[in-house]
Length: 161
Image 1 (cartoon, helix red, strand yellow):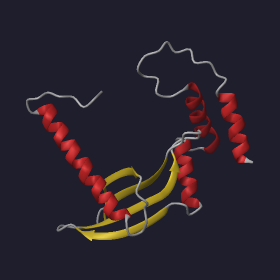
Image 2: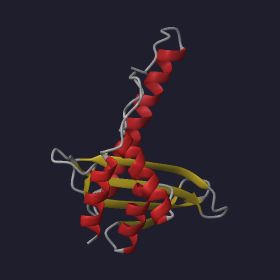
Image 3: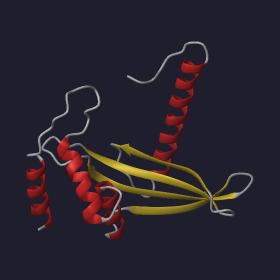
Image 4: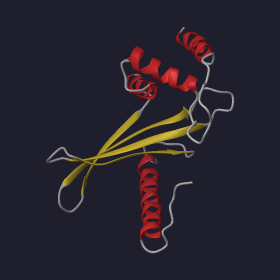
């Protein structure tokens, strides 16, 4: 029943006119904005995506693994969350990805030290999520440091398109 409701809602949303004049900042359609507003008011969530994530957790669709690590100075709690076959949007040419997240919290202060999310085409399992997240972190660190070096140390290159 909810799927039928959402199909009708999308149909109504597509009827809203787009009066914008053009430019580079039109990544999202008016229909997307309408559905986002619906997500906030109907679900009482900051976004429809946040609502979907919350529902996946409640329905046990998102796996969660918690491990503790000693970093040499203090103990940390590493929480991995992941789900496979997430649809990026609702359309015929939809791309299905696998999503994972890591949250690192110091156990003594409960301060969040690190948080990031990644998508991949590799299947995520209890055994594969930690190495895939480690690879994602290493790639992000390498790319970020290289871009910062290229931008700030003489070459003055910018990573924006």
